[in-house]
Image 1 (tube, one colour):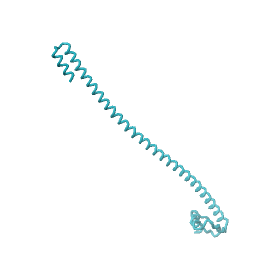
Image 2 (image 1 turned 135 degrees about the vertical axis):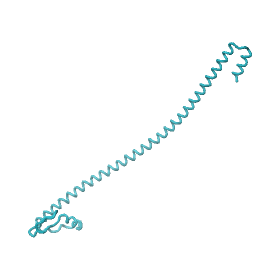
Image 3 (image 1 turned 30 degrees about the vertical axis):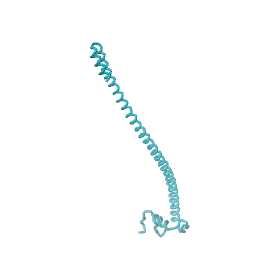
Image 4 (image 1 turned 45 degrees about the vertical axis):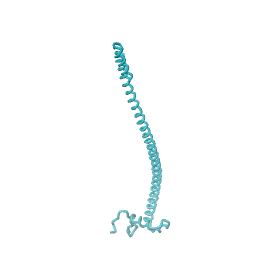
Length: 157
């Protein structure tokens, strides 16, 4: 109807024709960007055209800024990928050192446990030998010659 306005439209003049600004986007996609703009008949349409040019310029500037941010983010992602790779390499080296040190520790531990068991066995043998010698000394102090000979033969074996 003649008095109603559609959202995104404006009047063209006396004959009250309506042009949808939303519909111009689809038409612009169909037209080549290198084609000159169509001839504009009236002042209202010319204003709308300039407004759309300004919007297009703003959109292009915004797109340019977004592309710059995307490029910066891509560089940042690459930098983080390198950091993650380096951290993975360091982790691998640390794990390799851990395994090597654990193996060395286990070997050293086994060696020390064996030395401890050997030392304990020698200490036990030494205390047993000491106890036998004390018994022999006690027998020598108060025993007969035949008892002494038997104790010496037993101690020699």
